[in-house]
Image (cartoon, rainbow, N blue to C red):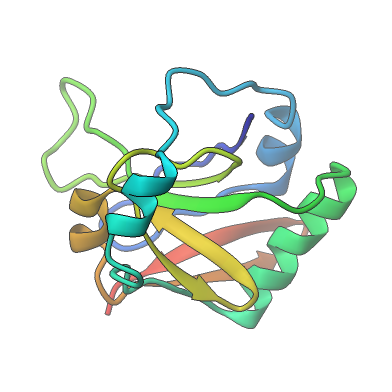
Length: 147
């Protein structure tokens, strides 16, 4: 099962994902993801993802999991959204999902108590990124910070 943190696409360097949007999509089921076999996971590089969470981001993810009564066995998938037709080339969106499924070829890293996973192309594009969480008034969200 996959839990999605739906987000507001940010321009170039940031993407803020609102807590309200996360809660609305808490019931979304995943589908179409191929699970990686034990052999594929064993053959994959052990730590090839250079993305980290701040303590604030880790605490926000933990709170979301508690609020949605999600227990262990979840990964935090990070990645890039594909551009939609008609959107400027440099307009970048980010993906931050909770999922129980790995895809064949996923690379991973542990950060602040969570296992982050990504497809290799996304891992390369996000090399060195830090994912933070910040609040402004009543709005809070995850921010992808470029190195």
